[in-house]
Every structure is written in C-alpha cells, then in structure tokens.
Length: 278
Image 1 (cartoon, helix red, strand yellow):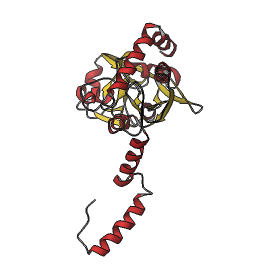
Image 2 (cartoon, one colour):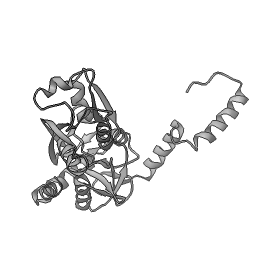
Image 3 (cartoon, helix red, strand yellow):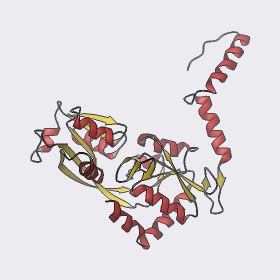
Image 4 (tube, rainbow, N blue to C red):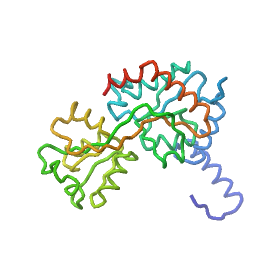
C-alpha cells in the first residue's frame, strides 16, 4: 500500500485509524506480523531441542481433500497421511492436532512458521520445494495417472497427442506434481488448476474439463468411490516420494520425525496402514 505525504497531525490520525482497522483484518501485514509474533512467543522448546507451536502437541497442517491420503468424513480427519501423522505424534509422546489449510498454502505456512509444526498432505519431495522447507524421510511412493470420462472420445492409444491440444482442458490440483506434469508434457493444452482434487473431478464430470491428472492412488480412489463414469487412460511411473514437511528452522524436529518414521517402518505400522488405505 502506498501513502502520500501529508501533514504530521493528519498522518498520525490516519495511522491510528488504520491500525484500528487492521486489528480486524486477517489479510493485513500488521495483523499478520502481530499474529506471527504472538505465535513465536507461545512456541515452546522441548527437551529434544525442537520447538512446538503448543506444548505437548504436534500441530499438523493438512488439506483434507485428497483421499485416500487425507479427507474429512463426518467432521473427522481420515486417511493414510492422517494415521501416519497420529502414529508419528505418538512416537514423539505428543498429541496430534490437525489444522486445515489449502494445499498450496501449507508449505509457505510451514516455511514462515507460526501456524503448524509440520505438514502432511501427500507432499512429493522435489528440489523446488526443498528450497523453502525440509522434508522427512519418505513413507510412500506414488505415480501419476490421467482420467477421462468413459463417454469421451479420448482413448489410451495416442492419448498424449490427443491431450496436447489447444482445445483440451486438463484439471489439476493447484501446487501439485500433477499440475507440473501437465504443464511440462502438454504445453498446448489448458492446465486448469483447482483448490482441491474433488473440484477437479467435479469439473471434468460437468464438462468443464476434458481430463484430470493427479496422483494415481487418488485417481483410483475417486473412480472407485464417486466417479465410476470415468476411467484411467494413462499411468505415469513418476516414482514420487511422499514425506512430511518441516521448517528449516526446526531441524531437530525433522530428525525426531525421521526416527519415528524409521520405527514405524521397522515395526510394520506403515506397511499395515498402506495396505489398509490403498
């Protein structure tokens, strides 16, 4: 926001009024700074050397619109990532507390601090993301898949040339590896981003998009549960590693999560959860 030069008294009055207004606005930089400062002052350092937003609690940011990894059912967080988050918190002797954020807002929130201790939401580890946050060891490997409506003209044979067309719209979830894949491999098509995968599939079913590209396990889940009138026309072996995002300012927490994940792998918990949800 730019402010013109005015008289000192007038400026002071305007500033006072502005501060009063900003106190009611969550979008203002003043409010954000105040919230960040408050969050920092309330953060606690554990005996293991890592910090937490709330003593005794592992605050986990997630976007619950990515089944079977995270979803809301009857107001409850469910899914593979949710159970892994709970299991990690238990290993650390902490109570898990999940916080809903839109997917593409989670990593910036973790990097900035003040909202959550870590993020688990089907995050694929990649070099760009690693510039802003640290990632734990991986706990799952997934691929990409592309789905279309069964009554469409798209077929598996020659699907790449069919999709890479200016008249084609491919729905993706904003900020995901699916969005990146479409942008890189189908530059002539329109890559339409939505806030969550459910909206992307709904857009395809409504005829607002010709296809959906997202993680394979999610596509399979969507087709089995709600979109039986759609089908997979391409599987892409991307071998994406899912991991938990942690602030670069909290390396001791990353190390503690890594140890917890190792124990959960060694005792078979993660394999059991994967078999249950996928």
